[in-house]
Length: 205
Image (tube, rainbow, N blue to C red; front, top):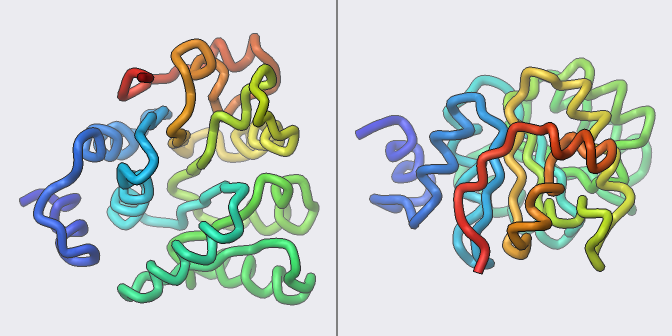
């Protein structure tokens, strides 16, 4: 049994991965930037939680959904995995404290909104973190031609430049083949995104 299956069994009690999960995990652990195109309910969180637990350092998860942040942090803590989230409504002191805990290695997962990426405090603390994996959830929001485009997702380009050697996993359930070309974590514009090395692991319906 390899390390990924051991982690899956230890924390989630499953004997095997669902379709596509293992392919995505092995791609990420090989240091490749990866686009994970999976249906809602397909177990996307496993594709970054398992590889991150096999790596040294903290996994940074960018998601626009505060409810998802809280839910996943609670679920991880429930099985003994240290995780935290930074979101609107927290005081500056609370945010600084949580980020400092991540710098000191007290958390394995840090969930943040894309809007948080532009703040000076976050950028400062990020420089001192040992980030092993950068995850972009709902990555179809990067597409400037999509109805669900979120300008704050463009800050991911700056974070990617700050973490040039860290593998990126972009997850989505809705990208079409044409839009998936632009769903990349180096989205300074279409030309930069088009130059990114991406490996979609599934075809869109």
